[in-house]
Figure (cartoon, rainbow, N blue to C red):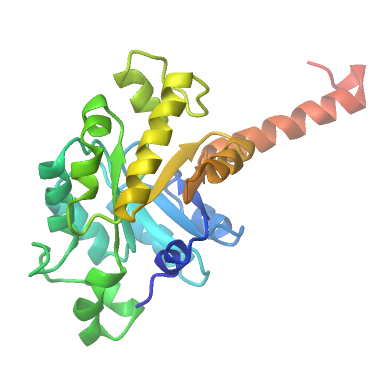
Length: 260
């Protein structure tokens, strides 16, 4: 079992991450061959459950994109299950302090580093079954979402927790927590200053930073800013955007007969 995304990040290269909200193996298969470095099943806000996650992983397995999951919450039961199902990375929402970061790391890692229970029913199939438990702690990415003022204030202690691989910024929830509207591609100077602070802390602790983006151009800008893992919208959003553009271009170029 080898985590290609982890190798890429360790080499200092940025990674472009896809996001699966649609509970469909077919759409996951389509997304997995589009050039993403990793693809994340969203079990928090996507229309995904555990069974659809497994189907997405099965559909993606023939392609090189690393499979990850955003879990619904910092709860060891579901974290253990997504890892047993084959996730190579766990993105966990609303990590606000060191204690919550430690609980996340404990749920993701086998003893003695953590408290994960043994039972990698699908994950063991990615390598030699008897070796999975020996390598899992070194391969799984443990990613804490920073979305609140508490998370921002406590970033150094969060990144100091053994087992935490990096952070992932949720701009919409961060905006809500700071009294702003929930949007992705933010331009507020104080938010951009927060991003700089979080990036500086990651650099100090030797960890990577990721962020969710609405557009490809903003994602590219975030890479230039220093982020190493950038997500662009999600599968349903990209489909809706492309479909809307196709309809609008057709109507415009066809003229009056095709107008609404």
